[in-house]
Image (tube, rainbow, N blue to C red; front, side):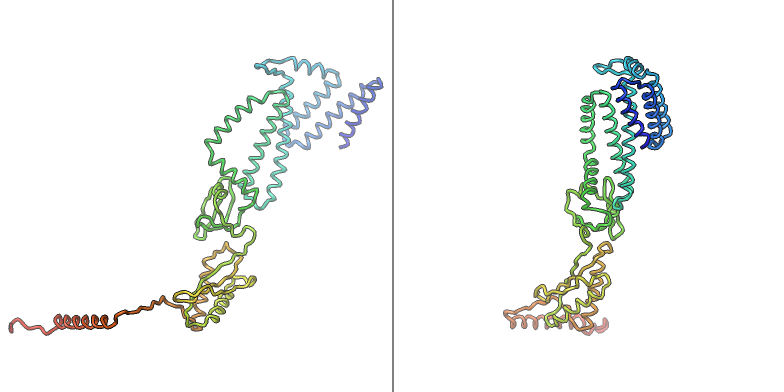
Length: 380
């Protein structure tokens, strides 16, 4: 900072002396030397590449020497006169040097911004390492593209033809890789709106599991049976997804129980709540509750409702444990589980009794014939 302030002071003094028609030779010399020193200091501290830092130092000394000798304008005019025409484009040595310097400067800015972004991304625990690398590469590619475009525009190159060509190439790539691009864009959308994130428990088209990682093209869904489903990002955007842990991990489960009409329904409801309270995964707040749902054909149907907070550990197993405890408590207290029952009404019971009696006589006669005494062959 002190050297920059000195450079600004010398520059202002040079302008004042020139306005007053005073000698500015010493001021121009000091200004050139200070400028060269500032460039060297900046390149040594801000540029990590040793080669690039040395190149900037040499360039700064050359510019300072030419300015001191009063040959800077002459040399730039000579370099500008060494030019060739490519169609309507005039390309000189001075333009190439300016373009190279400008491109190097913009690339350095892009690299610096990418390093800052990399530091920020590493602090986001929601992103997997693969997604962090992918995001960083996409941003770095975009920054390099912008740097090249700005460098070409700064030297007067018309970018219309390049824009038309890149547009045609982009359309071709988009048509050929439509699904891939769609999954990439869908991954970015999921990353931005955070509707799906690692650790969430989701259900989609009958598939249930928890998210283990978010990748560029797909989402990894681990199921309870040891399978790992790779779901394309587009399906998560366009399909219907149930996120069990989107805003809260609290999930209500229910178990339906039927008891016979001769049982004590109030006792059955209390025992059902006690069964839920004996399971460690079931929360006390909100507390479990049992409701009488309906009077069925053969049973009084009850519904036990309870809450859990760890859906990733499974839900079928906790329901199984609750039903097993209900079974034990009901058998211990004499609560009956009903069987299906049907009442039959006979319109003509006498005719049925006669038919059964005739059938019984026929059966006994057949048994006597088959199992009667057998005569020997000699007697015959």
